[in-house]
Every structure is written in C-alpha cells, then in structure tokens.
Image (cartoon, rainbow, N blue to C red):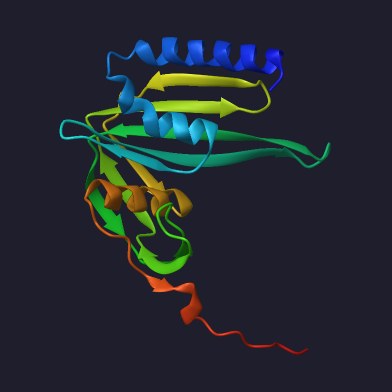
Length: 177
C-alpha cells in the first residue's frame, strides 16, 4: 500500500469516528452502517443490550440529454428495530455471508420498521460527500430490494436460520428460438 493511500485511509477513519461520536451512541452501534458505507449491502449487529441493522436505498439521477448520471445511496441505521408491518411475498435468490451458495427464499415486498433511533447517511457520488443526520422519525418503510435486505437482517437479529431451496434444486433447460 502506498503511504499516501494509508494517510488518506487514516484521515477518513478519523473523520468517521468524529462524525459518529456526535450521536452519543456506543461505537459498535455503527458497525452495520460502516460496513454498508465501505463494502455495500445490508448488515446487522447484535449484543444483549443493542441491536442494529443497516439498509440501503439507492437512487439514480440521470440526465438523458448529457447522458450522464450519479447515484445517491442512503444508508439507514436502525437501532433496536421491530416490525410494524410486512406486505406481499416475493420469491428471490439470496446469499447470506455464512453460506457458500444462493438459495430461493421468500421475502415481504414492503416492510415498515420502528426503531429507537434512526441515523441516515446519504452518499452523493456527484459531490463526493457523505451527509449524516439523525431522523426525527421513528419509523421507516422500505419496498423492493431494500425491504428484502431489511427482512434478511431482521432474521439475523432474531437468530432465525436463513433457510431456502438451494440453487442446485433448479434445473437447466435449453431455449431455442
């Protein structure tokens, strides 16, 4: 690793610690959000006293005339979340970090969760900034992929083994035109 890269990483980590330190929460509460920011995806973390999940919503701003766009990613950190509602059923392939293969699982199409606190980090790829704020709301709704991720992470918090039909249960079939 180049020394300039190492310096940049250390500087970023210092800023990260400073911004998250402003929320008067244990550092480990932010682990899911930090993983979502750095690696992507949704994450969960659980101790006897604290449960937290991160869920991403991704939006694309695209200028059709100039043919250029940017994504805005919102990473939602929910502390001690509980379900308010679930709606619909979607069958989808999913892989959990603890398994080697994807499985066919069922997820709700939309979920509403309530949490003691909700922190939102919005990543602007256009401005190369990460804006962090605490939501005044105590509930948030997710639909589509964000709902699938939220439901998956809630299962982790509930210590539910994520089960599904393994990929090798599918059959190949050739399609000819």
